[in-house]
Amino acid sequence: MGLTVKVKTSLDSGKGVKSIYDEVYGYIPVSEVELKVIETPTVQRLRRIKQLALAWYVYPGALHTRFSHSLGVMHVIGILARKFIDEGYVRRDDYELLRVAGILHDVGHTPFSHAIESYMTQAFRIRHEELTTYIIETDPYLNEVFSEYGINPKEVASVIRGNHKEPLYNMLLSSDLDADRIDYLLRDSLHTGVAYGMIDIDRILHTITVDKDGELAVPSKSIQAVENFYIARMHMYRAVYHHKTIAAFQVMMRTIYEMILNELGDYLEPFTTLPKILSSIRKGEFYLWDDNLIAGTINLVLVRGLGSEVLRELIRLLLNRVGYKAVYDVVKLSQEPLSTDRDEVVKRLNDVVKDLSSYVGFRDYMTIPYIEELNLVDEDLCVKVLDRNTSVRITEYNSSIINSIPRFIGIIRLYVHPNIYDKAKEVLLSKGII
Amino acid sequence: MSRACCVVKMLRELGIRSDFNSFKDRLLAQKIVYIAQTVFGIDFGYKFIWHIRGPYSKILSRDLRVSVDPTCRCPELSSESLGKLKSLINDLRSLGNDLSMSAEVLASYLMLSRDVYPRPEDPIKELISRKPYISYDDVQNILKIYSKYVV
Image 1: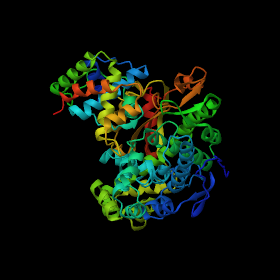
Image 2 (image 1 turned 120 degrees about the vertical axis):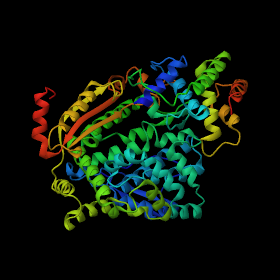
Image 3 (image 1 turned 180 degrees about the vertical axis):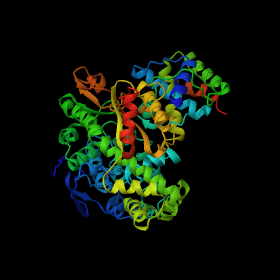
Image 4 (image 1 turned 60 degrees about the horizontal axis):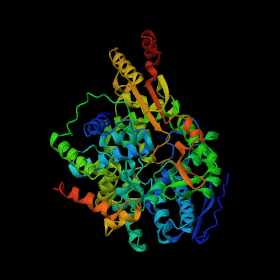
């Protein structure tokens, strides 16, 4: 694709000590300090974590990594920063700070991205964003580079955490139209081949500005590009990020990961508990916690005949692309968020799980509820539209199609082990649930 | 889910509208929850980013819209802390300014003083420079009220 973004700025690039060819933007110039950050084991680790975990089971080309995405975010945030420096909204001295935050915004991602992160969130109540900022503040490799180049790790972390003193800097990584989303939509769309994710990045990056309130805004002539951005995200959510089959394999991967931790935890040391993970970060060992470690352990379990037969059977299924099956699948488009304790569909799902668990031979790992939600438009942090000296949120702009699209998409599914799919379907049919 | 319910319950007890259809209502709710967490230790566990209009939590924004079970139990809402918060809100109301503006000023001041990085040398000056619609006197009056509640 080689999409080239040309923004005329006084901080023009081309001064990098190196250029890295990127499949989305073409050559990305990299400065000396950025190169040093990229060369740390902590960032190199991202080459060994796939951006979309197991999406390649459905889209064979989806093999791109967190590394290329991070470079892309650095590039996009750099374009925005250069533009806003010219317009007087970003301090010239902070250009490198923002680009480095872009490279590092995902360093805390778990192996297999969201597949294993869901376990971390449930077991340890921690998300990758929190690991990311911990890494930035304590990782020995990064901190050596930061010391050498006078970069304050707390300030880099604050941009990612969203508590930097300059609210605009936080918006560049944490708002409806931020550098992270711009890059992942383009990149994931390219690698999956799902065309709905394509966005008019040229128009967005050329026309985006800051309104009198200090918030991100586009002129009304660019509204279609922004509307398309929101709609692309909605489509990618269903077609890729929560695709029924992809999610089934990710649920299976998470189940396998948990079983290995319980049965064969030694093989995943020192990454089995939160204190050990944090310690590995401080000791400079975190770079070893990657997709390869998990995938290698999974193979080893079969090769050596380790663990329980249930675990080995699940691994055989995963490796041979036989995933869990969705026996119940509802997508809800709504103006309201999903209420997990009042929603009728969720209640029915819980009843189904209870019903199924009473059947002989059904075990916990065989029935996995899956409830996900996308907040498509943040009413308060959405993009604003500039029109005749006024600036209004796109959700309040009369002629925008965003007024007519749902604010929330809820996905409610029940995945079951393939061995019990027929029986589960029979039970659900007999109860009139499907 | 109980978190969302408890937030809505708290806001109702404080006499704050709970339909949150307008930006102003949502802004007020965001700032009150931030103040409840940081000043009165009513820990809902929301994480806030620093936005141009003060502390903001995307998850809270979502939770304010969710349909909740009004019978939820909320152990984090002790009558003592809720009483103090109610008293602070009433004192802010007594200033005669729009409550959402007063809550925005106080919450923003608190976040600038403790959660923002790099921390500004003078949070009040920083606050006024970022919010041209508020006056120095307004800030002083609001902080005078706040000082009564600082432990």
